[in-house]
Length: 257
Image (cartoon, rainbow, N blue to C red; front, side, top):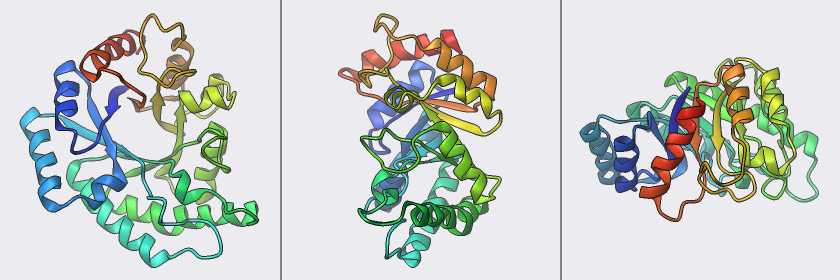
């Protein structure tokens, strides 16, 4: 399982730290990357080339202003966003895009959850899945904490939505922080071999970068991911001192991988 960590595409110093630490890749924000100027985008590509480092994943997919559920869904805007973003993703070498995007997917108050679910299926089946496949990209559906979303809470929810899309490049994701907060047993990951293709990790109670002495047991999560054949695991958490925290977390995860 490849190990990565999240950093913005303009956070070039952090990316340099990840490369020198030994991480396999950096995970950037998709929406942020898609709206960057050509100059900023090229500077990011140049840094990756300079470091001989990879960017294999992206999160923060669909911005909140592009609504995927509710009475009005602008599929022309969705199509335009996907095409520009996926073109850039392919140029970077991104393999998996994480579909969390609570602001875009959350069900509006008073709107039918059943209709909203079908709208997410339409988004994935008719727009997102095909656009991503055109550029060789997979989509990993991220369950989120109940404090952040009102639809798709568990690893099983994400996998089932991926299945409903009918797209072979749309699968599930496991995020340890969200699983902890939603009481989603990490052993549930084992039920879906080949269908949990990406994962996020942070300390369950604090969402901080993992450390050996934070009192949290990461081994069951890591073991479940390996049993399911998960391809990549990214640290997505808070850090007070990135240059210190990233190497410590990397060493811990490397020992469990």
